[in-house]
Length: 287
Ligand SMILES: NC(=O)c1ccc[n+]([C@@H]2O[C@H](COP(=O)([O-])OP(=O)(O)OC[C@H]3O[C@@H](n4cnc5c(N)ncnc54)[C@H](OP(=O)(O)O)[C@@H]3O)[C@@H](O)[C@H]2O)c1
Image (cartoon, rainbow, N blue to C red):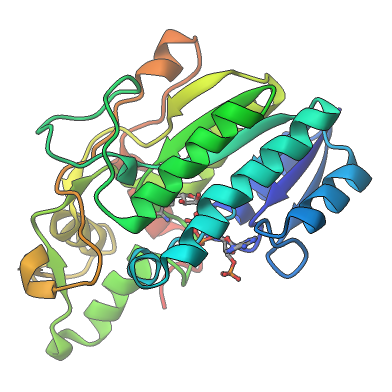
């Protein structure tokens, strides 16, 4: 029996992680959403961790709105960097293992090939810098830790990129466009969550890339979603990052290779297209 604290449980990855621990059985899992635990509040972190005394903490809490991070850098660093520091310090005090979820946005996206766990980081946005700060805090302060970098998460009906695609399908005249010059690794939240469970329970140390195999642009992914749903893929229209003119810069190519999982004898994630087909055909996905 492993007692687990999952932070950010109200989010996409946090909810999937709580569900994965419950499905795995034999675990005492406590998911806390932001209203129950603000990870930027050091005293609150100390109190919750001290009361629950978990064997493992899986940190899924983060400020994930990349443009908001650019506008509110102090908040971004408070949540994405100092929050993980508070969790890591509290975890070390009680001997708990920390699994910290991080992002492909720690890379600048200029390598022109998928990134492995040993590639140099060089974030280009406040979100990326603050998430890298979280990685450094966990590595410095936790006694036992895993950093699990993921990317382009989907898999929560109504709350993800897939919803945006279906919205485009219901309002084709609005012409929602998808960028064709940002490439990444779409990742199915339940596939990610199943690996997070193993990393936590087995107290696996180090940095792991946990993203479904394969990569595409957002435009290509939108077409694939529409095709999988039996809809006309031409509803999706291409655009460019420059044309969208968002506050935060985006790295152009951040596909992740799952080398550490393979080298450590853990299962790698299947191709994203297989997961996408499964998700799109599952009940309750359409809006
Ligand atoms: N989604 C992606 O495509 C993606 C890609 C790469 C990496 N990641 C990483 O995956 C992790 C999980 O992200 P996600 O996709 O599940 O995003 P999400 O759906 O936005 O979930 C993040 C959760 O964190 C909560 N939160 C925000 N500030 C908090 C605070 N101060 N204390 C406690 N909780 C707080 C949010 O609550 P509120 O909604 O109430 O603010 C939200 O429920 C993050 O570390 C993210 O960086 C995600």
